[in-house]
Every structure is written in structure tokens, then in C-alpha cells.
Image (tube, rainbow, N blue to C red; front, side):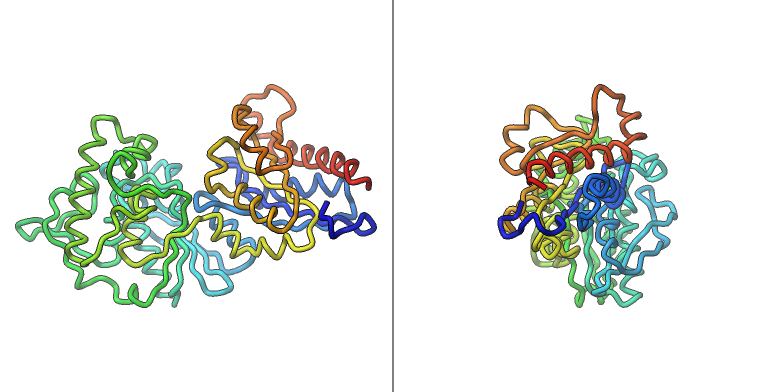
Length: 386
């Protein structure tokens, strides 16, 4: 319990989980845990603050605080016409979630090989939001299926890539080595008056052993014999682009995010920020923690990577600064990481009550979250002497 509080008033519980990827949105997770807490502590004041770290679910988390959410026409990773959700927050910031446009879970977009996918659709989204008057953008980078260095994004905003004969080169990974010149004359001039925040928990450079292709390519379908080839093509693309624009970003932290989409945004002057920190700021997590007694956070599965800028870790750090104890409640917990996790969380728990198949756990997740939330609340109530 917050030392400044007493047991004479209803407890204040902040619930700030990430989504359970492929199962429940962060908002659904928070609501289910909250229902369990309320069952044990009917008088508790529940503050729901769904959070995300710049990947899938970031749009949902940001829109929880209000704003205008709608769908737009844009191209998927395969260049086909599709529709995707975007949003404009109350402060006028436009939100784009790359995973919703060129995501790994889009079967149509990933029907073509990775060296034929690109980020044209993200450029489409930016242009349409510029048309609506947006000049501040939050771009969530996690969960993309692309590895084009953001060439598609830049082409979607008006850049033209030309080969040695002056022929247009399509912004596809397999074609990047052909680019000899970049024509920036048709780049949308509104980009110059636009502030872009690129959100990710990835700090990799564009190329090399720690670059986009080597580290993240395999999960997108890059086979071992393609890694060096595609990496060289990205390096060539960046050298030509940087010569055209007169500055560089290939070695900056985050350039390798989303298959190099982070690189293209950096080249356009974007600010690179932790996705979880950015979301926490926009949803007012610090305000929610003020005067709180307890924070519950979580994610689909927690392991050592959780402590590297993931949403539950960022939430716990903010709670610690506010003097609020934090409990981690996730779909699964890596036992080998407990010694590290417990340094940031006052207890780490899984929602499962015994051996269970993954598909069954996903199907039962809302009930498991409610039941786990209730049992945690009963334990907390006893420990707090309520």
C-alpha cells in the first residue's frame, strides 16, 4: 500500500496491461482484470490504463483516452488495395500502426515473398492524414512484415527512385540495388512542417550483424542465404538516399526497426522514442498513478526481454517513482527469468491454473484474467489488513 494512504478509504487500483497478442486487446485485458478486482474489492476505485510498446495494439491503447478512430484506403505489404484503422487523438496527433497496414498477421500482404513486400501503404496513410490537417504523427513500428528500408513509405510520399538509365525502380527489397539516383522534387512539401515520432522498443541500426535483415528478417520469411544479399541492397539504398538528402541515419538507433521503416522516418526528421514511454505519456499513466495503492500490469508472455523497454516494465518503473507497488499478471511467465523480473515487480503471476493447451488458454483468457485478478485482490486485501 502507498505509505501516504490509509485503509480507511477505498483502495485505488491502476490496471495497465499490454495486449495479449492475437487474443485480447489491452483494453479487454484491463477490463477483465478490473472485473476480478471489483469482485473481491467492490469499493475499489479502478483506473484502467491499457498500454502498448509501439507494436500491435498501440492504436487501441492510445485511442482509449478518446479521439477520432476511422479506416482509410491504403496498400498492404503486397501492394494491393486494402483498408486499415488509424486515429486522431484529442490533441490533434495522428496515430498510425504499421502492423495494421503491413503487418505480419495480414495473410494477403504476406502472400508474396518478403523481398517483394514494401511500405507504400504507410506512405498512403500519412498522405491521407496530412490531407485531414494532421501535422503531428505517432507511428508505431512493431509487427511489420516488410524489409524495404522504408523505400515504399518514401515513394508513397512522392520520392522517385531511378536506375542508371533513368527508369523508375519500384521500392521493393529485391530491386533496391538498381537505384542510382533519387528524385526528391515531388516529395510532399507538407512533410517539412510535420513532427513525427517513431515508436519502437528496437534500437538496431539499419544494416550489419545487428541490422534489420539479420535480426528481424528471419521472422518475416528471409531465409539464411538471403540475409547478406538483402542487407547489401539496403546498404546501397541508404548510401544513394543519404547522398541525395545530404544527411545520414543508417547507423542511428532504431533505423532497423520495422525492416528499416524506422530509417526512412529518421531520414524525414522523425524523433525516435520508446513506444511504451510515448504511450504512457499520452494516456496519462503518471496522473493515474497519483494517489494509487496498487498497479497491475502484464502481457501475453513475460521473460527477460520484458525488462528491455516493454510496456509492463515501463509501467512498473513509473509506479516505482510514484511509490506504488506493481504486480505482473501475464498469460505466461518464463520461470528462468523470475530472478530478474522480481527486481521490478512485487510478484509475478500467470493467469493459468494448471496445464493447458495454448488454444484453450486463448479461448478462456477473459475468464482466466477475471479469476486471477480476483485472487490477487483477495491476497492483497489480506496483506493490507483490509
